[in-house]
Image (tube, one colour):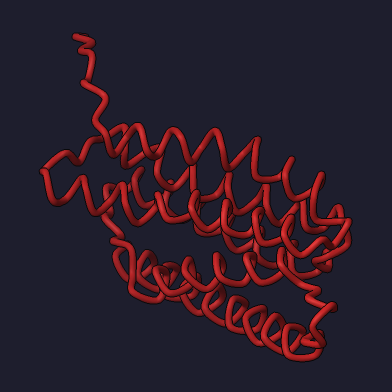
Length: 191
């Protein structure tokens, strides 16, 4: 068996950064800053989270644009996404900004789809990322950013922020379940 070294591309570096920063730095910032509900601190953590999340779009865009798609990138990208979201959800749960029921459902969906994807790979079935899964990811990111910022009590927007947060939580749940159902349907139809 011949083992070859693969050149690490810029998109893969972005993915590795998201993996490390998302798994370690984002949750530490959420737990260290957000319980105090200081407007500037929460905004900083939310913007930092959004910047880290943006690398998910950026690495794929750059990889396709410059034909730098790699096996390593394809393996690490979903892992980095899940690490970022799981760590953020757990950090928000720890500080009391997210109910454990949401976390269990969202993480359960992600683990189920990861299992389906692994079974698909084993069966040599290709399941491409669906548009609903892309929407799900975008809504998850926006939802977490809103939860990190909330409450915005000093200017009287508590109810507006709470409504926005609730709407995004339900949208997040809907797209999670819908895209999960869609992946399972695609997988079982190709068996």
